[in-house]
Structures are given as C-alpha cells and as structure tokens.
Image 1 (spheres, rainbow, N blue to C red):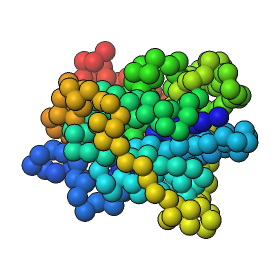
Image 2: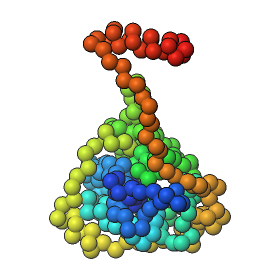
Image 3: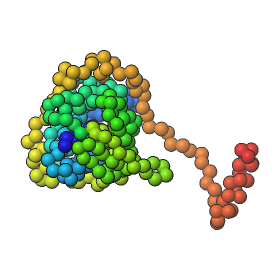
Image 4: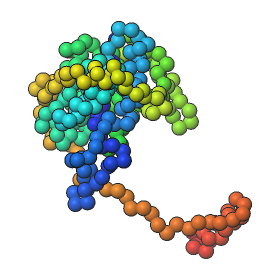
Length: 266
C-alpha cells in the first residue's frame, strides 16, 4: 500500500516572534523544524508501513527551498521518498490555496509512484493553528476523511477504521480507501531517527515539482488566495483580576457571591 504524509516546516516553538511593525511572523534567521503535529503523522505512517510489509511511505511538503530539510527529517524517521512543491507561484498561499496545491501534488504522486491509499496529516500547524488543511485536501480529492484521530484500529487495501476523539469519549469510524486522516498527539510517541535513517536522509534526492508539473490552475495558487493575513499579534496579558481567599470552598463561595452583589452583577 502507498501512504502519503503531508508535512510543513514551521518556526521552532520557542522561537516564534512577531514583527511589531507588520504584525507578521518573523521567519528570517529563525530556527525552523518539522511542525510538531506532523511528527505524529510521520510516525503513524511509518508504523502502518511496518505492520503492512511491502507498503511505501511518501512525504510531501509545500514551501521554499529550505523546506526540504523537513523531508529529510521524515526520511530519517522511516519514510521512503520526499516530494517538494517548490516555486514562487506557491508563495502567499492561504489554507484554500495550500490544500489545493497539496491535493494536486498527491494526484501527481499517484500518477508517478502508484495509487495513494491513505494520506495522513497532523491536526494543525503551530504557526497558524487553523486545522483546515487535512479536511480541505480531502475535499479537493473527493475522499472521505476524519480529523482528531487518536488511534488506527485497522488499515488494509479496502478500508481504514479509526477512533476519533470527541469531548465525551471517542467515535469509531470506518471509511473506504483512499481516505485521509488528521491525527492528534495521543496517537503515538514519535521515534528518534536512527543513524541508519540519518544516513539514508543525507543521501536522499528530493523530487521537486512546480505548478506546471502538478498541472495546477494558476488562478488557485499563492497570490490568488481568497483570504489573506492582515495582522497577527501576541495578545496582551489580562490584568486586574481579584483573588478570592478562604479556608474552605464554602467560605470562598460566600465571598464571591458578596463581591458580585456589591458590584451589582447579581
């Protein structure tokens, strides 16, 4: 079976900064790494490959030339081949354009490397947190999909059965393949790349595709995105809170009620 994993290069969690003038994330000179949620997607893909001998895991990303680093990291952890959607035409993409581009990349992947049975995405990215990409890719492809997957119970050539996390427990969902799932961190513990994996990643040659290669419609790429980020910023910490003291919960409750009555809230 053929499994594809979508990954993204994002700023390291401790190094995210915002430009005070533009309100945009500062990416230049900032250490980047594979998006944390994508690590769980990569691990799950590799585990499914190990459970199904003969399976292949392809990893795909859209981004500037340096984004090839996350493809190498995924290969070091057990993926087989990397595919890089890299062109100035992809710049400025919102989630709609990004998901369209990745969907076209997956279609191209199926043409060149064999039918794709399953696509795995991380729940969201740590630089935008939308959680849109996985479901949107599935919509472009016309595939069934499930988000917030915490466990894959069964996966074979015809179907996949998963547990989807809900507020009050979980749902068990079975879908025909090809399908797409977006996974959460509870699904596994990502492995550390082995020395053999690092050597394989160092030797790996990534396949680079442009809009023309994936037969993408230019009107659906990059600068033609229907939405744009006007400003992003770090919220100011709230101040002026009042701490309710008391020896017991009952005493604290009485003081809280008295304070609310004093302020004419109740």
